[in-house]
Length: 160
Image (cartoon, rainbow, N blue to C red; front, side):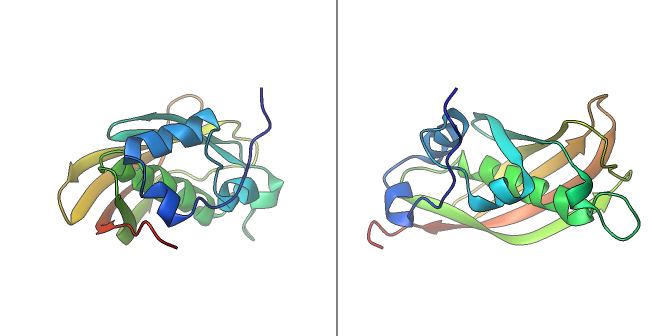
């Protein structure tokens, strides 16, 4: 297994690939994960058109003052999985960015939760806007958080 790489793929490089190929490159390790993935310790593990799965194991480093995992941890996993799900539907030369994000926390995430899953699934992807929903579940499949997003679809420049 190769060591995971982290960094930012320039927009001009991303513009040369269909969205699904780019996201599958993140899964395969041919494209580097973003630096937030390193910070939070998450991994992009599955990608198909309209669906992305991210996994992570929360730790004591992710706690809020109440001793549970900070809501921003789940929010980041959801934002990433839903945004990448939208990306998988885009043609070469296009990217997206979050316009709106709504999250509902169902259960607290504890630092000993083990591996949790954030799954983003496309609801609709049009010419200008993509919509997705996401769920964070624990290892027993219990729902921890649910979210929806809308993403603006934009043309990428092939120049930096």
